[in-house]
Length: 411
Image (tube, rainbow, N blue to C red; front, side, top):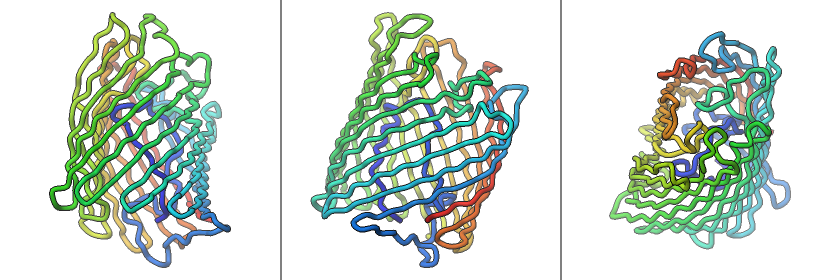
C-alpha cells in the first residue's frame, strides 16, 4: 500500500457540518481496504516518472436512490451516474516526503438535474522524518464540498440543489514516538464559506490545537492523555435571534493507542469537554467526550472496525451554534477469496440540539458491498445500503434505500 499523507483528525472538538466530500472509496480494493490481499497479482506497482511517484485512477458507477431528498413523505427516486477520479503525486528527497492528492466526485441525476453536483478536493502535505519515530508535518487543503441531503441540518428545499461549501485550511504538527514515550502536538485552521448568499449565516472559521502525551509500560500500546482547544468564529450573528454564536471548546481525553500491525490497531479515548459562549445571554455546558477508531484482525483475511464518537460539533439551528453528536459504527471486512472482497456494516447516530427548540434525531444505517478484482488495475463492485432516521418531529424522519454497481480502475 502506498504511503498516505498525514490526515489530522480533530473531529471530536472541531467537526464541521457533515459534507459529501471526495473520499478514498475510489480505489481498487476499497470495499475491504483493511484486508486487501498482498498477492503479487494484485499488489500495486508504483509508477515512477523521474523523481516522482504517480498514482491515477478512479471509479464509475450507476446507482439507484429511493429518496434523493431524504423527505419524510412524497419521496422521489432517481438513477445517478457518478464519476470519481483521483490523482496523487509524491516526491521523496531523503527524509522529506511531499504529496499532492486530488479527488473529485461528479454526480449526474437522470430526472432531477437540479441535484447535479461537483465535489472537489486537493491536499498538499510535506512530512520530514529526521529519524525513525519522529516527524514534522505541514498540510494545506482546498475543498469544494457538497452537502448530503440526508444530513441532520441539510437544505430541505427542492429544485435548487444541495448546499455547496468552499473549505480552506491548514495543519501543522510534530510527532515523536519512542519505545516508552509518545508526544504529539498539532494545530489546525479552517475557513468554511457557504457559496450561496442565502446561506451566509453558515460561514465561519475554526482554530484548534491538541497535545497528546503517552507512556508505554510494556506491550503493544501506549496509555495516552490528550488536551484540546477549539475556537469557532461565525461571520454573522444568529439570523433570527441576533445572538453572538462564537464559542470555545476545551477538553481532555484519557485513552489507549495501539501500535500498527498487531492484533488490534488504532486508538480510543474518553473524557470531558467544556463549552464556553461569548454571548452573555447564553449558557455554556459540559459534556462527555469520546472518540475512537479501532481495528481487530483475528486473521489476515478478516478485519473488524469499530468507530466511536461523542462530542460537540458545529450547528446552524436557530438559538445555538453547536450540537452534541453520537456515532457508533461496526464494519466487518472479509477477503472471501484472494480476488473477492466483501464488507458489511451498521451505524447508529444521535443528534441533540442544545439551546434550540429542535427535536433530537436518531439515525441508523446498514450497508454491504462486494468487489471482484480482475487484475491489479481493474475491479468491479456492487453496494447496497438502507438508512432510517427517527425524531420527535415528524418532518425530520425519513427512510432511504440505495444500490449501485460500478468499475474501479488504476492507470
